[in-house]
Length: 226
Image (spheres, rainbow, N blue to C red):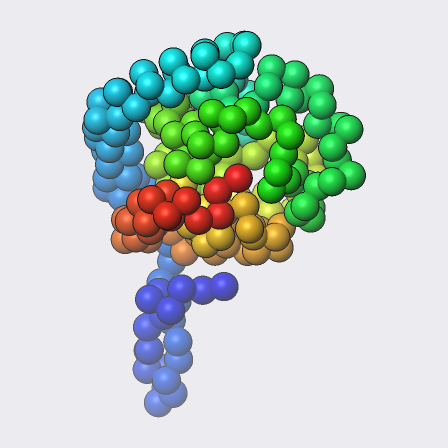
């Protein structure tokens, strides 16, 4: 898939050819993306501080276990990093995953259940409003993630990827991305693959801004949250 905005008509020996502009991620564009990430991440963290506090208290009162959930994810160039989220499931959720695999509602290496019994009462609300994702802003500030990019995958998922899908690892994973704003948990694996690769192959600062604006709409509506 090639973004039409990258296509330019060119005259060559009396013929009109279509020239596809290359995607440039380095130089001032990389600096601008990093500056945008850090500035927005710090701003959102400060602005959402009361939401954090309320969510942490609610998690503590609702179920036993830690407030935060830490998990290893695969970052740019295949490097592993530790991703932090607010806990939305029971403490033994990972151990119970195997017994629920037969009820998986998506294809490919992803695992999703609309009515996952491991999700706590408070956790369901936090997920619907995407509040559980806020701690990932720390990873953005640290440079392991970006505000916009492909979903950070689990090592077990990456092990099942084919060669083309590994192109996702050319960029930093994101807090939000094309897959998240185009259906989120309602997308199947083929859509997930195509949308993320489209983002990688056609990246631009303008795309990042459009995805950020669409994310606000998706979060406020709770559309496709799981």
